[in-house]
Amino acid sequence: MNHDDDLVFALHAATVSQPGIAFALRDIDWTIRQGETWAITGPMGSGKTMLAETILGRRRLNAGTIRWPILDHMRDGGKFAFPSDAFRLVTFRDESRLFSPAKHYYQQRFNFVDPVDDLTLGDFLQSSSTDEATVRSMAARFGLNDKLALSFLKLSHGQSRRARLAKALASQPEMLILDDPFVGLDAATRIDFSGLLGELAAGGLPLILVMGRSDIPYWVTHVLELSAGRVALQGPRRDYKTRRISNQSSTAIPVEDRDSLLGEPIVELTNVNVSYCEKVILANINWTVRAGEKWAVLGPNGAGKSTLLSLLCGDHPQAYSSDVRLFGRKRGTGESIWDIKRHIGLVSPEMHVYFTEPLTAEHAAATGYFDSLTPKPTTAEQDAGIRSLFQAFGIESLADRPFARLSVGEQRLVLLVRALVKRPPLLILDEPFQGLDQVTMNRVRDWLDANIRPDQTLLFVTHHSEEIPRCVTKTLRLREGRVE
Image 1 (cartoon, rainbow, N blue to C red):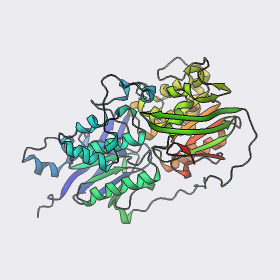
Image 2 (cartoon, helix red, strand yellow):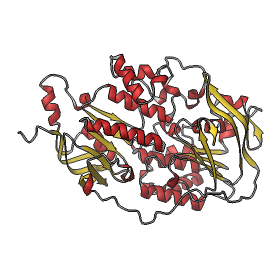
Image 3 (tube, rainbow, N blue to C red):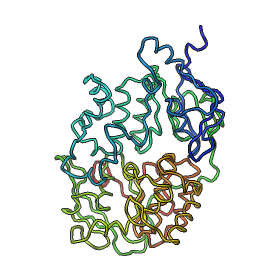
Image 4 (cartoon, rainbow, N blue to C red):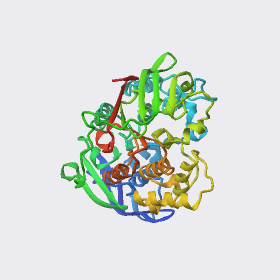
């Protein structure tokens, strides 16, 4: 038997560069064989996504060699010409000829009227396969069969994530590469996804997962860990030793909320109901948040968390027909959306997707001063504030780099700085630690505990209780649009 018969992919002494970085990947030796399932892991900015793009042939080597023996066998039949014909990469941010956030505005996803040239979920999935039965089968496997007629723009973050995975599988790839497949998913959905992907791997589909060290599923057979663009460790998962973070500390939510000084109400929701096409999204929500309180907002995917936050931020049109009061003023009494946003600092998965302006990291963060996505002139004091936060989060070296060329985790840190720069009275952090490695998450969480002012109000949304800052003392739990 030829030694290459079961070889899927091979890199030898491979070096890859990127504008602004001398060598993003250096001296990579790595082979993938049939029957292996790999996790690419490592700290934020270590080159994980770039390595995945190299497998697809999207990155040119500066040195070394790259081979795809599995495709050499398939080319004999004329089926594939390039790696991207056979392999599929599913990333956190989906930019394609079918759907691009840049063609829409963020609030549009909450409107009743569908956008011009609307793309339904069914159309999105159908683009991968002309076989309607395959599309429906994939939609059913991912729990999307009742959403096929829904506008893709109006899918929740979790639903759009599942849709991208279903679309990739509908094209029947020879290998599937998933960049942070579990980001943004609640615990139950992560278990379901992991089980489905495990079934695919057991069925012989080569899988590569780009992810954090703590999330590696039990069915992964091999691990490659990167550090600063080099291979720090690789081999069978059973030999892989997860590093322990010595400064971890408990962040469990207290069983009982501690008494807080009663400040003025910042958020008041009274019997709030939101529905769309006869589907109830929020039902009879009553919630008061007072100045200086720190809340965790919890609930599974589809519980209504994003809709709830959109009411507070002025992005949802039903806020005007509901009893929603912010800073003591009822929505719809003459204030503009900008009057609302100037009091709020926000970071969210949805904002991340729609942040497509061609800016440097520093200029992207500076837009937080103006509650816009486009740059404006800043003062010396404002520039100093951004630099201070970049330094606190360990990303000062990213300031002049294009935002679009940063890793997902680096982008999320920049957007977190954007939410913090103006020191807003109300800080809404919706899954702010997505894409961050454990060390960076600990650093940012500690910063929040030490630097959020007593009079600042915090709403912290997450699926992971260990992410919650210690300053959080109150909890709102949603399930199926209702307060538990």
